[in-house]
Length: 505
Image 1: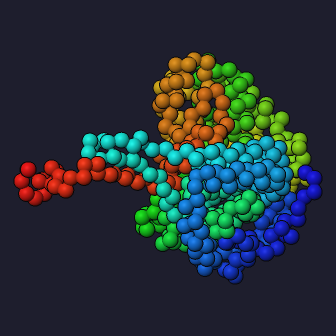
Image 2: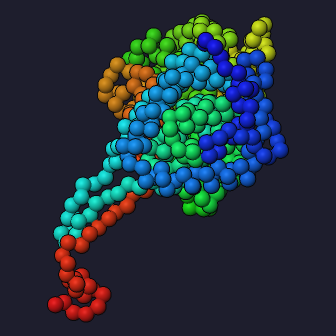
């Protein structure tokens, strides 16, 4: 990784970024970022208070008039410069992301960081492409056209599983559209969000356009969502917390975007390529140590392939290499914390009472014992209504269940409260096409599971929330649509007036 920067030196001034400056929080409470691979302290910082949130919102509000008045080309140029700065600092971003999350460095280097740079370049282009209906004389006597305008200060909350990418997904469409933003990252993983804000300043974005407040959800987060000067809230996290965010946001009539939990089905028909499906299942269930809302968690396999699929997935899982996140050979890092590791282990231990743990289901010993590691785990024989099938585990655990008919498979795939992502595996284009139509999820892959691209939207159905990240669909959510209508007749007494007063002339 070259010369790694010293985190404590980099953030000596604090873990709040307000009006273009790093500063310390004023809550009187501290929090420690821990390397989940070793349990060692990375950074201890002061959490944000509600007063810090107020200052960040005030900075964003001051910056809004000038930033929203910048031309689309000027905002686009700024984001192109930001993409270049991120590319220059890619190694530092990958290092910080792996340090605070425990991600294998190959995932940070090849997925998180380049994905964020690509998102930045995409929204640099989107800033210059405001979509609207063509100006025309729809009434006959008037010319109508649509304006897309910035809406104001956005207050967003990002999760701990993809801190850099989620920060970018919140910040980029907001500022590309001319808004300013206050982002609250998770207390566990604030480093790359702060670095992203600093990179924006390095790229020449004005102070106050991007602000970061790192505080507790019940204090800083709720205050941000309920702030009277915040006009839109975007939240990514659990469905339970999303409900609370919605309560606060709707009380102040804010625009709301929620990307919540997932329990993605992985539907394997009996004509599927077994080897492809098995490899896909291992990769899709273990990405980011399973801490991914779109990760494959429920594999439904048509009965003729079920046993062979279980055997092959177990074989492949047993080849996965756990280890130091900074070792390029490491496949699977720790979970984000020991508390999360223990939560995942609890699901598996309870499942032993009603299902079979085919492989994994244990905390490794030896050199990995100090970290929050958990072995890749495959569970079979669970009932559809069991906890391990219905609840979001958020760890390296895949549950496999059989099905008989195509109708049953699709019905089972839809049988959870969630609807974020899914995949269907088949060589039959009609079978796969039916699955893409009938599975209720915001993204359905065919013969793959996980890839995302900046040009396409990401967001869910049902309890997985509403609204989209990435793509032009996301960009539009951060704009206010205004209809402008001009009279073309220059007639004082118009014919339609007689419906209100007087007689037809």
